[in-house]
Image 1 (tube, rainbow, N blue to C red):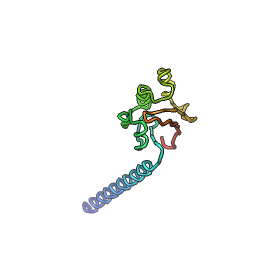
Image 2: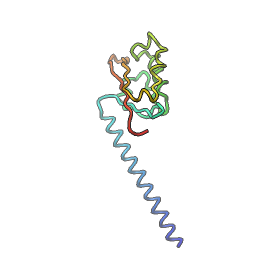
Image 3: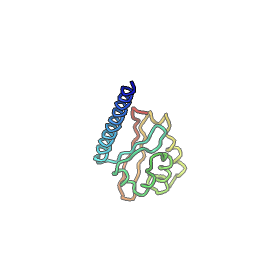
Image 4: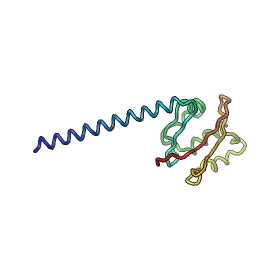
Length: 134
């Protein structure tokens, strides 16, 4: 009886380890795909906290690269971008940033764009689109 129980526990542990390995493989595959995209890509969670961005995104916004840490709020990143004057019009109206930053549930029902011009001189558009996952 004890041997059967130990065997069942071992089998369950091996299945868990295999699931973890498959999840890591899938995550690495997804990261590789996002890194291969020519555009900058950033992902925030449902609470508007930074999750991930590809290298192109970091390179485009290198002056605030230090802000791209998992858990950092969108508002904090946007305020850093405002301070660095890489959000269009932010130098003229820095308090306007709080209206932009509070995206909340209502904003997720529409597309949100912020035009920015980082130090490298390129202009680009950030567009927010909700994902199916929370």
